[in-house]
Image (cartoon, rainbow, N blue to C red; front, side, top):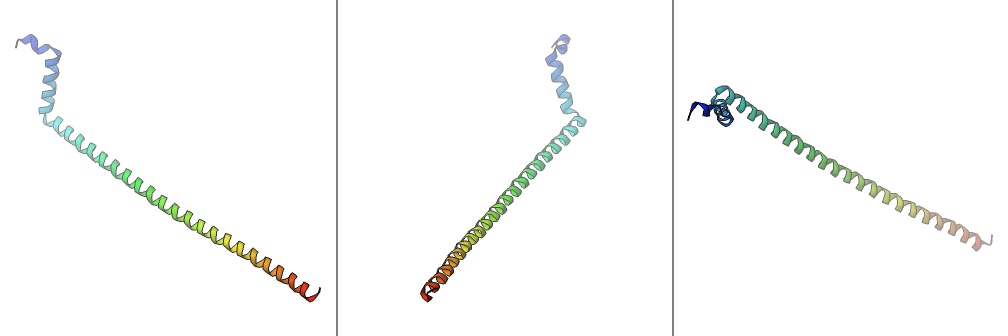
Amino acid sequence: MEPEDFLEPEVVITAAVTAAICSPRVRKVARRGLVYGISGVLLVGDALASFARNVGQGVKQAETVVANVSNQAQEVAVGVAASGASQKRNQKGTTDKGVAEGK
């Protein structure tokens, strides 16, 4: 290679990258950045998994509450219907007694 070839941009960039890769300081910084980057990715993954788990538990709890409320509403409806039928029977029995006694 001639000395003028060393001034071409491709050669200068390649030489700079090679020097940076071989430099202990740059390797240390790159290693540290890689470790922190992987650590960040793992933390985000754990946070997302925890959030999804909590959402799932919340949905299950909501389903349980809705089922309990629904069951209670059905019990109340059955109780009201039974109470209404009982009152009708009592009224009919009173009316029948009055007719039978001649009142």
